Length: 448
Ligand SMILES: Cc1cc2nc3c(=O)[nH]c(=O)nc-3n(C[C@H](O)[C@H](O)[C@H](O)COP(=O)(O)OP(=O)(O)OC[C@H]3O[C@@H](n4cnc5c(N)ncnc54)[C@H](O)[C@@H]3O)c2cc1C
Image (cartoon, rainbow, N blue to C red; front, top):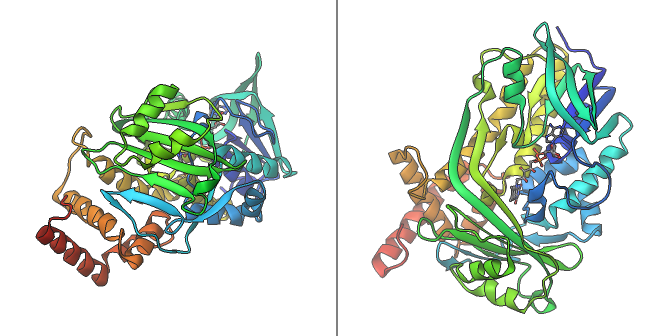
């Protein structure tokens, strides 16, 4: 039976919740966002989204989808001070023991705070007449009737309430309770996959030093695993400021204290970030963040699934943030929802089919993150011969792209999800990788 099209609820009003609500509002006449924190245009730190204090690179494919859903939003970010930079030319990047030559790639990122992006999104949502916001509302349960979700229960202040729905989407982030809620409705408990890497971040805002403006826009230092384990980045944000972030695997990150933060910068593979930061004036405290690792919930494996219910964003899969994929995945998931919602409404596919199609977009990103995390011996799990080969090849691509323009363009295109990964395996690229590694073996260059 096709679903009715009157009322939909989105649990969580952060990045994924805003995108999902916008898509739903094109079909449902009444969309309600339940958000446990505040939901307004103000660009103040949100307690429920602590990662907002840390650097957020928004990959190009995600950005394109955001612009399709909210035309003009990138221009708004630029007007508010976001800095647009070519990822090959204006980012000075050290990776795998080499500084990369800087080439124009035409692939750009908008550098600004995560808070700015989300505040502009919330502004658009607040102006959408089909969307109602209930701030300070904590979703607490789902109700089901005849195999479909019929209501979402929530608490607002001291009051327990519920709202009837034709469709509900959980976009409540990594701490999502959906698995428990569904279990209480009689469904199986969902399997969770965790790749434990004990990650952490620390970030601090500084005043931007004008003397570096012509030298680079972003200064990025990446480790060469498994021996090096921490990264650092200086990236511009609105208000002529820098957001400096350092993070690492397996406990290699500082406590959120200025001395610890500065000490960690001295441990990066090269001293450049430390030298720049030592001259800059801090504008904030040091913010910290820790997480166990990448986590995904395998809803596609359940044999029964309620009609009218979907899980999206970090509630479905929250990836190791060091690979900068989270917001792009949210966008790809919203794009899948936009594509498949009409089919769901016409009754040609089921909600579980839509959920599976949303989950499909996660696979390649998850595999890439797993491959990278498994470079560290402490990461548990099997490493097949194929995986080891791909790790070697990925390292060689990283080394080659330091000096070869086309490889750099392809690598940046693949990581930004606008170039198909198979481009990295074209014969001309493979040939260059082999020659480059033979040259290193002969002349004593880096070895994996
Ligand atoms: C340190 C760090 C750095 C990152 N860097 C990047 C990066 O560089 N690039 C990138 O693309 N991604 C990055 N990410 C990932 C990105 O932040 C997430 O993928 C993204 O925030 C997911 O959005 P979401 O809306 O699914 O969840 P969240 O942003 O976590 O939002 C969940 C929302 O749900 C609300 N909520 C929770 N429970 C309830 C409830 N019961 N009822 C009502 N509301 C509820 C919360 O208040 C919150 O507003 C990073 C993450 C971290 C931790």
